[in-house]
Amino acid sequence: MAEADEPFHVDPTCCTACGVPESIAPDLFGWTEQGGCRIVRQPVSDDELGRMFEVLECQEFDCITYRGRDAAILRRMAEAGLIYHAEHPGDFRSRRMMRDRVSFAWAPRRARAPSAGEVAGAFRAYLRSEKGYLVWPGIPPLTRTVRLSWFGWRFHAVSFEAGSEAGTFVAILPPGEPGHAVGRMVEAWLHKCDAGPVRWYTASEWAEGGAGTAYRM
Ligand code: SF4
View (tube, rainbow, N blue to C red):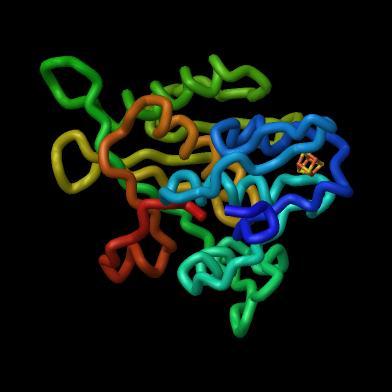
């Protein structure tokens, strides 16, 4: 595909080599000989699209845009609050959806299924290994809630509950903007620990028993 026809596209004239794309989606981005970033592969899977959206959200100079007209992608961009990065948004308008619940299966190799407190403990351990976070210890009876901060003493809480089947769990994110940031962390952890089927829900989808989505944004 000629570069000019690529759905996701980088404007080569505005690059300051910010490093955002390669830190989030190193499999989708590379560098030109002139030292600018470029897309080496268009996203295909849900996960790849999600990471492309994260790049769109975090890029410093809005040099990456979506030139395509795929309605499913445009709808997802609108739900992620990113439609302003689309060059042909059509009738889609940004209506950012907060998927603040995620269900997943988590089964480390051991005889008995873990408790929600143990799952929370594994997430705490992950955050500590990543560094850069203050993580409150899991003191009984609050072992199922992880309190974390990435800026001073502003702590945010994510709670874990057992799901309807053994070995399945639900994480409930904090409301508002911090929920998006915590969602990114939970998503990265679930990816790293190879969690089973992961589904993300808005509060209303959850309340109505909806099927959720395989992606957070
Ligand atoms: S996102 Fe923009 S500034 Fe950052 S590396 Fe890519 S083109 Fe350069």
